Length: 319
Ligand code: MTE
Image 1 (cartoon, helix red, strand yellow):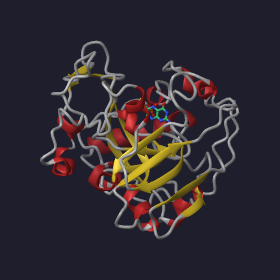
Image 2: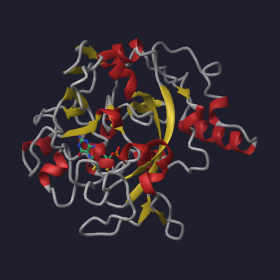
Image 3: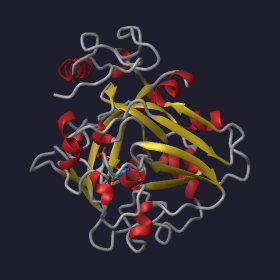
Image 4: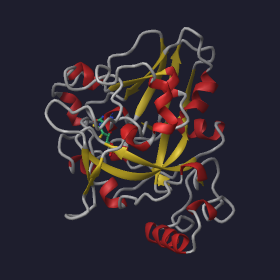
């Protein structure tokens, strides 16, 4: 059994809504024609400081989306710092790797660089909210996940980037003693990712500190990870220790590893196949044998929010 130190923004076991309750509530709300926001709106579940429970953001309630069961979201992972096997991270990321306290450093071309404990940062930014997003991996599988966290633009505002800052880079921790995958393999550790400053400021760009209304499990990128739902999952970098505002476009880990197959933008695009497989459809994790596949949507279904950023860009060349 794993013993966790209670975060000060976490609610106690008894106060928390169990998964079963959570799903029952959702079913009830669905039947009653209400959104989850109606119950998770804050007044029903309160009593925590700083963060949990998070407030459901009604604008991102994931209407019509079927959420992937919790045990699949937390049991089927890509986290190469720990394992190349989907079931490996759930075991290996919980074998003594400490994700709290956790400092996040924000710097580069900014007026207000800072280094802060993640819990402090959550408090400073006014707590967290819940958003339900589609999640599409470049390997052609997908999930629907309720993330808890805050909009990346809030952190950007706090750091106050200079006008020369055109890109944002994100860096994962480096600790080969805790993360055995970092002792070898072909990845040049630590894992890094990047966005244009416009992408980072998009309303969808999110820093997740929880899933399903609870702190994010280690295997999902504790204690803080990026979520950019219109891009392939590898852009959603886990367990971030540094965020830097820079002038030049960074070389992200997967592009560095295999530039013919993985680009910088990595926008979900059913019309541009991976050199080794089609991206036209996706396997729904937990979808079962008969209803387990669906067509992949342009920008993973988020065209309204993001397509404007890519006007005039050749998406086939800039994959
Ligand atoms: N971040 C780090 N640091 N290391 C990784 O191996 N894998 C990426 C991304 N972020 C990865 C990472 C890939 S390929 C995917 S599909 C998602 O995390 C998986 O997130 P999940 O395990 O929470 O579903």
